[in-house]
Length: 248
Image (cartoon, rainbow, N blue to C red):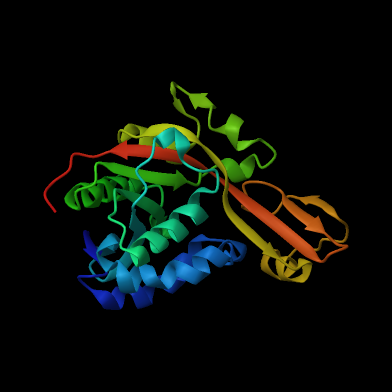
């Protein structure tokens, strides 16, 4: 198996659609911030997007983007993922020198999950950060098992422990790789649409105004029948990796 960047093999970007569709529920692909900026990751930052290949088989992919933000990690905002992508694009357009790398996604094909590959992806993200001269890799982590506990606030969930390590397996991967859990970002991604659109995306009916538990969602979906609006706010957790920089 080998890691390959989109800069090295641009045609790989066109093969990612089926992989992403196999991992994420449809509603997670409807974030307006992501849809506005995601294509530019591959056209403007191809060296920061990579895939893992086994021969010609696509095993997984990861995405990251440089950002000019260099504040105290405790000041990372609560609207993590949307903020990171939009701010990094604004910084790039303004010519602001980047100061850190933001990890946006690690996605591994379902048939290859559970093989320990997540550790390799995190290590490679750290290598990319160090190779580009960044001492900080910051990531709004979407915890793997949170969807089983959608009523538990993210602030409490991130404190759960198992044998002195985080309860959540995705957080454990990062901690074992040397990351520090910084703080929750309870509004990492906001997806707002009509009730009908949400019913289409989830295969559920929402007859009344109220809170609904949606498959694979980390928090309840808020439905407002009077205004025909349903809104989902995806909570994540900020982690920070410190990297040994190398010359750019």
